[in-house]
Length: 284
Image 1 (cartoon, rainbow, N blue to C red):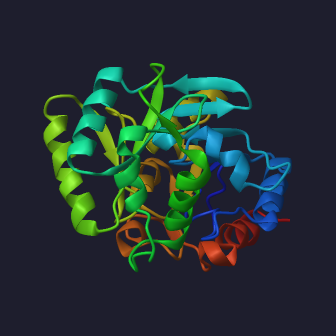
Image 2 (spheres, rainbow, N blue to C red):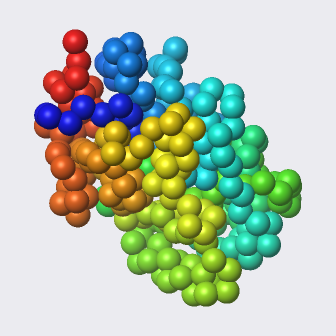
Image 3 (cartoon, rainbow, N blue to C red):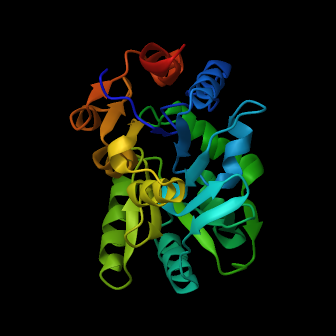
């Protein structure tokens, strides 16, 4: 590889996260190696910042994190940028989700994700066994854990700062119908939609995505897109992969993602694909 980036942005799910929802020690080690060489290494994930600690090995460190598909950015405890969904949009979407019995998780900043108690029965029913064949193992495990441990079931919405909505459905037909409803709602209240699997859709502030988050993080460090590499695997990574100078798709990525990148990893996320790729290109 002739291009040697100054900054590297890494997606989580399907990229540095395997299908058991864990980041390997090898990945932690190659990030440490690269940072010791002077590379800047960042996370760019659809996950909220509160989720990350439970997925990475102890002592895992990066230079910064773009979270919730570009809604917030952090350098250590410093908040570099933060966008919030309006309470009006939140309440409107929850009402519509209830009408269509769509599984949802609302992510307030700084506290546990929320689902209203009045929606608990149908939300839990979406995660009943057996696991649908077309649902990815890591997404299913995340939903099972969310139902069991992560969701705070509330009587009403509290606070006024929210990073994103996450929606899920057992069937593609159900989630596709919901996407159409969201598209109609966008005509009244603008927002951004992001998709990372065939069974989900997320909602963020209008004109926000991983690319806008990457741009804001690069500005914080005095870096540019022309000095940047990104590695990802799914549709919500496309804005970021299209933005940077050198884009890499995971071996496990769909063809539509691979087609727009400069390179593809030789190994999947379950085979330490990011570790092997970065080690072969830049490791010592």
